[in-house]
Length: 337
Image (cartoon, rainbow, N blue to C red; front, side, top):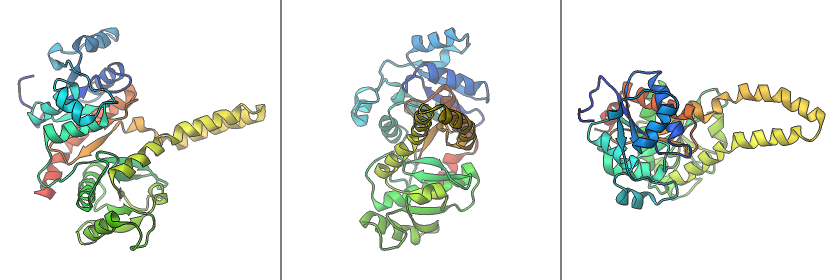
């Protein structure tokens, strides 16, 4: 694609080779999004494999909007090494398209670390951002969301990084979810100011001396209670929390399934419970949110789960479109300028 992007037409590049079920889910999910909203779609990956998926489903798509890539970064590869060695991978090319103004957004369900590293080194950070962050929505008991940042973009952090995460996620929540002056909690082992260690203590000082709406320390139990709109932590802890949360629904299903096998009475009880649980837990389904934004880079980058379904990919792409339409990157740039 030779013409540069314009603000009137959103261009979204999708990593067709990213994820456990690529290119089937990635291609069809992206096409589903295209059939829902108006934007320009670019599919990145093995051209023949992409065309085979499209043909099998009788989907028409412009061939010149399929960008052939020859390298593939697997989930197990070292992010930095893979980005250096596999320059013609869909992850690197997708990030380059954003950098070179050929796309507004890049969406991938591939190697999270590789997508993050490519975003930093290819797209680049917004001026004033020390380190990007992944912000993840956690459903809470108030029937809203608690946003966790950092959910795993980078595992080690300094106090200034965590303070930056708070600034980025605060603007994200304000723009995307229309929450004015969102409250911010710092994840700690207790609510008292003296609790924690050097990282939390120094971060707390930075937050208290800022114009952000800092609530104070919050504990792990407060995330699902919705005590604050945003919870800040380093990426190591955040990713552990995210992976633990992802295991909850499968665990619950397995528990109910095992219980139902113990007796006929249990099976009947489980049958009644199944419908109630399905309705009560609908907001916990990650497919509805698709993927997680990498905030702080000079463009839109959304990272999906490796096992993303067709629906999850669709919603990832639609989220990228929404971020573009609401001018999220421009508004983050304004507060940091």
